[in-house]
Image 1 (tube, rainbow, N blue to C red):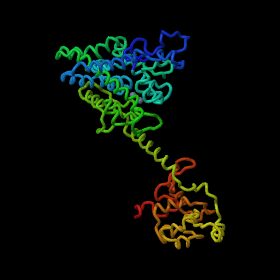
Image 2: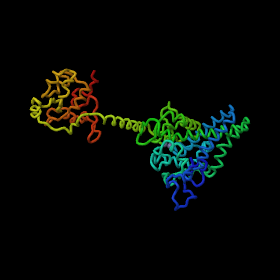
Image 3: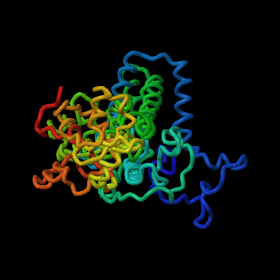
Image 4: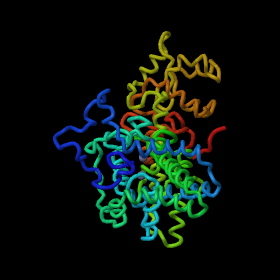
Length: 466
Ligand SMILES: [Zn+2]
Ligand SMILES: [Zn+2]
């Protein structure tokens, strides 16, 4: 997480072009990786701070026993610095999902920098581009380039600053705390990331080395890896209850790792909502912290999307999934596409010895030839209806057919009777201004509700048949 890659270089000139490469000279990322230039593609400063130092921390930990007090402090400091990222960098500065008083801002900027993930300004700028250009070439950590790339590769490999999407950060440039932290980034990150935890453990209980290794390096490593999971795991694992056009997903596992940032499908859909989890039972300690700060007067103007809008998104996504399922089923030829038959032609056709086995129900002609043998009510009954208008006998005259029977009948449609004389239900629907059993979904597709098939003459208000 850093400027041009490095988590510690997150200060200075922002994402402007690298001065080492002249304006005219093409950027290293524009050249293919070869055995001769691969090391130029690597952002070594990033590698040092997110890979080499953590590895050194693990090696050093082998030689330095972990003291109980240091372990407790490391965990407490872990949660504070993680909150600095989730409640501070992310929800306060990148998304302005609430407003914070100056003391709270100073606290969040201080513990946030201790997470060693760049300055607020750099972090938020990249994150705004990520939201604006999710999954595209302009997304700085697009999961489309691979899970490992979204997790860490985007920092390990040099990125072309020109390829990252634009994001407006004028509000951040006007925030004195953000500006100060950006200008003094190196001092701030070294102090809050490593010196401060060392001092606490050293002066507190004499564990200088443990403070540096456990509460400093390894604690920061875990916060880094947890945050990186929002860019990788949260775009790869879980459900998409609000929108499936892009990669963000909701999953409890990601939420547990990331202080509640795992409800990422919701978050990308409603980014300025101070919550990531909208249900009370979902794990979102960042939301609980912001809410608590509000109760004690440290935070205010917490933004929430209207529940009506959230539910609309959820219903639309459910409908979309349902539509996909529905489109895979045979609902019969739409009435409007069926050929029109004169009543006499229908009679003649069904009377032919080698003709089709045609039955009219509610003005629609059905060919039941292949179904005669399978008819649950027996061959005789269905055969007796061939060449006749069976509307009444199908709808209770002989037997009140089930919803499934009406559905099956739609797949046997072959025509409609000319004149509409038999199609009383359509006329009635028109006069009553109801949808007559159809809800127009698109030009060619209709939504057919249970018991609303045109062949079904049972009263609309009736309870489901046993
Ligand atoms: Zn995301
Ligand atoms: Zn976000």
